[in-house]
Length: 83
Image 1: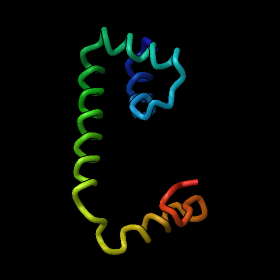
Image 2: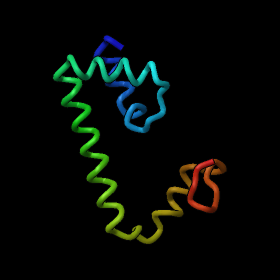
Image 3: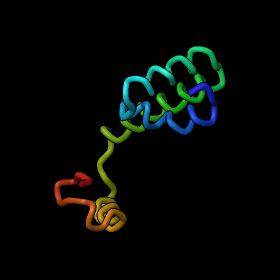
Image 4: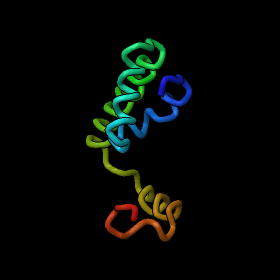
C-alpha cells in the first residue's frame, strides 16, 4: 500500500478492522511515513468517535428506523441488524 490513493480508499475498512494482517501492516507502514494520510486517518478516527458518542446520547428521531429499513430492503432483519 505505498500509494496514497489506495491507502485513503482503505481507511474505513482499516478502521473497521476488516483487512487481513498484511494489509493492516501495509497501511500502518504507509501512515508512519505519510503525514497527509496520517492526518486523514486521524480525522476519520476522530469523526467515528464523535458520531459514536453522539449516537449513544440521543434517541432515534421518529420514523428514522423505518426509513433505514426501506433503504436496506430485504437485507435488513427486524432486529436492527443487516444480514
